[in-house]
Length: 197
Image (cartoon, rainbow, N blue to C red):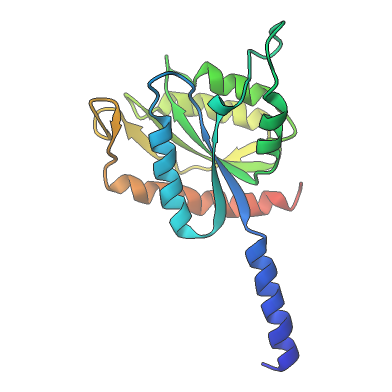
């Protein structure tokens, strides 16, 4: 390889490194006593070891999002929510099942935005008595309407085997592989969808 090729080759490598995807890990619960921060931190730790994207935890509880359209509500956090979601190329949703569905806080946060979600990819990590499967299926329908392409691999955590006393997160060893397999799909899909935005 000649000097010029090396020079331009290195420049191209640097540009590629600088263009890492931004993947937001969204904590889908705002309830007191929630365990989603534990799950989110675990997913981020696994993801960061991959080095293939910039992973950021985005906590809905950090934004003031009253019920959409509710009169007199303090929606001062809506602009920050919009900005946080707009700069992501893809997502990992941490979803807990309440009454066979997603939380009201997550549904409300999803409804606040439209274009910020469009043409991006997402993975789902769920938990509940049956691994959060029913919440995941509800979320998939909502994401489809928002033009978010959700991947097939879905780490499903059980309140009985992956949590001690229902509160202390202690995932089974195989769950880490499931997270990596999910991210193996989220990353290329996010790259592909970035080309049409």
